[in-house]
Length: 350
Image (cartoon, rainbow, N blue to C red; front, side, top):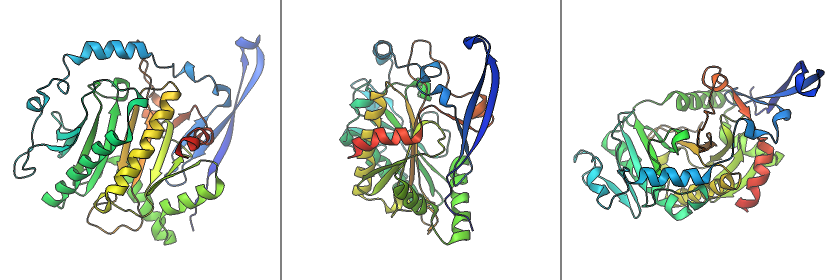
């Protein structure tokens, strides 16, 4: 019977190193395998402390420069921005747009899914990652949740929902203005389906929920365990799918239909702390996704899961952080050990 195993293996790479006068050098590589999906990540201790080779620090002056250049053309910035955004059909969202104080949700002008919405997060065109307060994040998450629930009420086939974000252009954002992206679909996206399928198999084999078992094991080991904010628990991913990946799990909630205000607050509070840490690490970008079990269907095998990771920093001539290892082979490179990352963030979570 399967169980939670934090498996790793070792590979060795030997060569005569011209940087050391031709001396024979051996690198010991650590491969990690995700306990659920078997996703592989690789860590080379020789790169520890040398992440700038692949990941130069953010050029914050350049970010300010780009913000000034792009502000005038940003459709989310003008005083009359509401007149510039698309609106939902009245039969679906009678108000046309959804608002929650400073956050506003409307259809994506260039959707990549049948129900693809954008959330505008306040008036500021540029925010560094330490300028994302929990109350603003909460408003954005709450209006996203309202939209998801209304989509499912409108059409019960729209049961595969995710909350997502691209922050800054190296992470895929087309505008600098802070925003989220929400999708409500009749079938899951590829990775969402993988999580659901593997979780179902684990449950069928063990009669246990993988996600609750994972939290139990991580809490016992105290290596990647960070803490909790209200209803969700936070850990550093054992075999990350992106740089500095952090995860949150809601052990009592299967789908977004079960979420209440406390769950929204819990995510917002933890996300604020994660972004503060990223900023202290001289980072400036991220992607995140929050996954739900299929809405309206009992799914004891799954719990709501959140993943956030960095992308390449904003610099004048930025380079990509995804190359053949990630895009073609599906593996990931570890620059900061998950256990170290958890240590850094644990203090902030209190």
